[in-house]
Length: 245
Image (cartoon, rainbow, N blue to C red; front, top):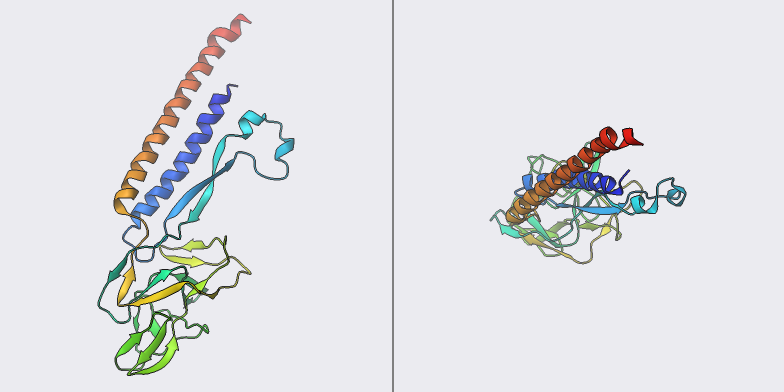
């Protein structure tokens, strides 16, 4: 079989998966704290048995979409005027306590719950640098760049900003929540600062996302047309050439 068929097929699979990713990125371009996903590629065969494959090296060397990785690029900081809205500049995540365990987010749209704790829009406690809920007594609230929370001039807690070892791949959960891999421990971020009265926007630009989506659609259509051409050639060979042999 012509190796061009394999090239067109792997190209179509890769562009279809990338199209799904581009659509998700664009759909969440207005979601606070959203981390865009970017595709990465690998060879068709990847693993210890790749060298023993029955397929030729020509086929094995075609690129195939290996999956998506989170982009950790900084999103724009948008002022809100709410003293409990917090935005992270630099690498790191807020930790929130959910019924399913701790989750990590860049969405700093917080408020004071009736029980006096700092919570997310969903009512989940935001955790301190010591992984404890953060009390917010009545009074004027000030949050420093290091996360220190002061009320009426007295420090009551420190908002935790957590980072992971280089190469750690967090798993998205919903639009802007992330789960750490099992056994991976978050540590205090050393290169991040907190801005009070602001929220970080998604790190996906709407215009760029729209262009990516259109480009992926066109590339997928090109691969579909290529497959149609090869399929037509195969049918012609089967109906016209093979009977002569």
